[in-house]
Amino acid sequence: MPCAAASTEAYFRAAAAILAARPDPAEPDISAALLKRHYGLAGSIATLSSELERTVEVNLADGRRLILKTSTRPEAIDSFRFQTAAMAALQGAAGFVAPEVLRTGSGALMFEEEGVYGYLQSRLEGVPLHRETATPDLLFRSGSALARLDLALERVDVPAAHRPVLWHIGCWSRLMELEQYLPYGGIADSVRAAMAEYVEFIKPQIANVTWQVTHNDPSPFNMLVTGQGVGFIDFGDGCWSPRIQDLAIAASHVVKDPALPLGGAEHLIAGYASVIALSTLEASLLAGLIRARQCALILVNYWRSHLFPADTQYIKKNVSRAEHGLSILAPLDGSAGEAAVVAAISSTRPPIR
Image (cartoon, rainbow, N blue to C red; front, side, top):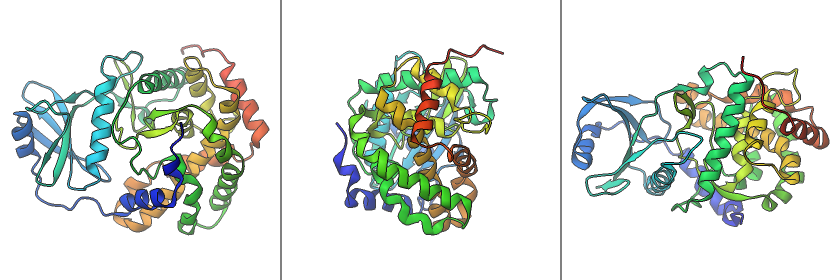
């Protein structure tokens, strides 16, 4: 069943407030003390880039590499509860790789200590997808792995799946209030056109596709090529949403080739559909969903760059890719988009080169 609350004004305002808040203050890093107190571990610590919580890499003497995430934000409780429960439920699943959550000394998935919340996970060893050459075979394998991830998430029951998340599809129809932060010109025009199509044609039908727990951010920064297969990290935006939304998000990042109707996303879509068959309705909505997700990314990140100009480079790391992809898909109307998707899911696996 769809999440009706995610379409409300109150949900949108709560979700926007989370991303409008300044990152955790630059207070003394107590990661080493938390690591020792809750896990009985010690190692060298290095801070990693992160927009909301504090994220550090921990290197243990035995060679293991771990990730410790902590936050002083109250909303982190629900976010960390969701993330840890989802990752724990995925252990042992086949067809993809996910981090392992390490339990605290008391056996809990996360810890709370005097206003500090956190959890510890393994660090996946691999190359982020955005650093790999996006061959047709790699994209096909990535789509197949994403479908396997969604099949595994379909069976999990996790807490806080309905917490406020601005990236939830229920917020998209309200995101155009952020268009004032877009630069004038073609991109703003393309965003307006794609979001108008979403509101008129896609939003009224999205409740009729399959909904479940999803990753909700399978970007090339959150997908890794590992020795054990394609891996997925950062479940922080995960929530209850349309299953096809994971495919739309992943596909939105690989639209690069203007010579192809879907910019090269055909191969990823074919890989996904080789595991999970798309319904007629999903096939008709997918191209518009891809464009709308590109628009959401552009709108939210221009807005957040205005709020936090010092962090613009990190915040907008995916924006140029979204703008380029949107320019490729802009000429597709509903019927042409559906035809391109149908052609993609009907194709065979590309040969390995």
